[in-house]
Image 1 (cartoon, rainbow, N blue to C red):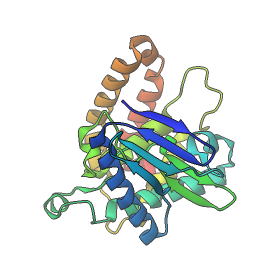
Image 2 (cartoon, helix red, strand yellow; image 1 turned 180 degrees about the horizontal axis):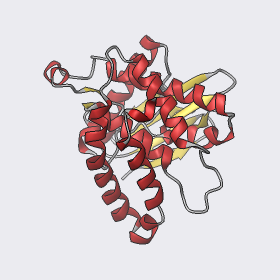
Image 3 (cartoon, rainbow, N blue to C red; image 1 turned 180 degrees about the vertical axis):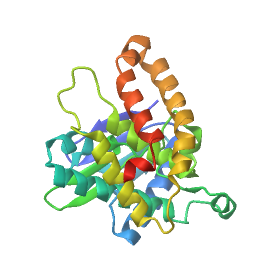
Image 4 (cartoon, one colour; image 1 turned 60 degrees about the vertical axis):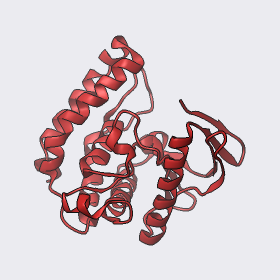
Length: 245
């Protein structure tokens, strides 16, 4: 279990020691990738207490979560910023630092592990993207290792983009358009062209695991009201790569 506390200048996260050590290592890797690529930043770690599994991060005060930001933007700005997210993920996937050579040869990449809208912040004042929470999605074991198929991060982003809470008034207006801008920018920024057939093949299995986790965590009724969004994102992905045209 995790406990997160916010102060005016810091984010304090308490979890198991193993999880804290893993997140600390992955965060430092992410900071190096962001600095080297120039595509994004990662809030610095200001403290680590092994005895309590506590990580203390700087708090980025002038940045908004993408979940709240994207619905407020014009179509042009939405495409531009979602494209920035795609380029950032491409930089993470092309980084060799956290992907063992044998795994890279097998087609695996460095992963963020939970590249969802809620873990992407953007400062309009500084025109700067921040990528946070490098601990990995709890419902995908391989997402927490720091390396795996690119389809994991791509799927998590798309699931968060199409996701809608019942009666939620803050929604991305056209998630399919945003997704196309994100994927096109991701593909353009990759060192080698990405085969979107991998995403098509992998997505149904990832979706099943996501739905099973949500079902266990939130119950059947709350999952049923989300079926429309899950069906929508499934149709979008299964139409790739034609959907990028």
